[in-house]
Length: 162
Image (cartoon, rainbow, N blue to C red; front, side, top):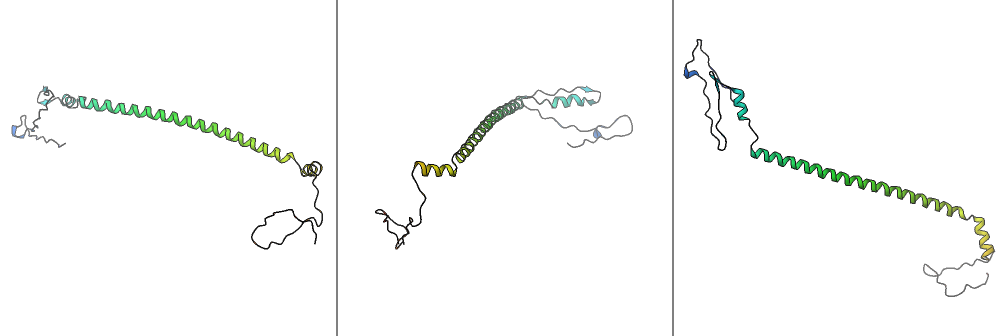
């Protein structure tokens, strides 16, 4: 805003050609004319400024209401998303606890199976109940592999000793 210049001459009266020039105000459609109250030679600046800053017209109010609605909708969406995240986190915690319990059960079963039979128990079951015996010298036969990577057995192994 440009500064207005006022000229002063000594004496009581100022000539009109030195008086400050006021801008002509353009009338806007839909707004009533401004009423100015003269107090002596100057205008009441506060009343004029208050009249100019009367900003609550329909467009401003509409935009303000829309922005408030958008803010409220954003808050509602944020709250629902936050609740969903919290419920998923609680489900994850419950599943992690369940997994830990299952892993503990598996470890307990594995320890029970490891401690269930000792080598002495296995020997006594194999020799006593199943009739198995240790191999003796000469009871193991070795074959020379003449071809290929594997051996196919089509019949019983012969009982000859070398």
